[in-house]
Amino acid sequence: DTNPADLKRIGDLALQLGVELNEDAKDEGAAAVAMWLFDGSVENLPGGYDKGELSPNSPVKELKSFPQDLVLVGRSSILIKGLSSRLNVPWSLAKEWSPIARKVLDINVSTDNNNNNNNKADRLRFTAVLKTLKQWGKGKTTNLVMKLPPSLRSRFIALTLKITERREQNK
Image (cartoon, rainbow, N blue to C red; front, side, top):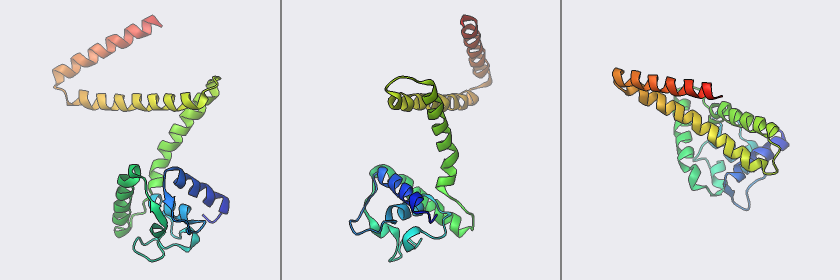
């Protein structure tokens, strides 16, 4: 993207993640780092930076510090980008995570519209976390139940069905 407003937004998001740049970094440095790290489909990085990590004009050279929380994500992203490049398979972490991020944002927006409390921001995040945790728990429970022997599995399903029926009757 070459739109300066979009590049600034992308760069600001990278800085919000805790990425710190050198004082003499170009204005497009933060956006270039974000695109280099999270979007392998970008052909030309902003600010004239090179995509090669070891290049003298790499956006990596602009990094002053990188948050510990992102190290594993960054390493994994770089490994996958390298493999996808070698196999000529286009891959972008940003595109992979986009549906999940949009879903979380949609949950937050729908909760925001239904919530008239003054502490909207706090409740939004908590509600989104609870919904995500509930989805995760259902998935883990399903996987666990599928690994049970058939006799235990049928007992568990029967018990779950009874509990669900009781809840429906109490509504």
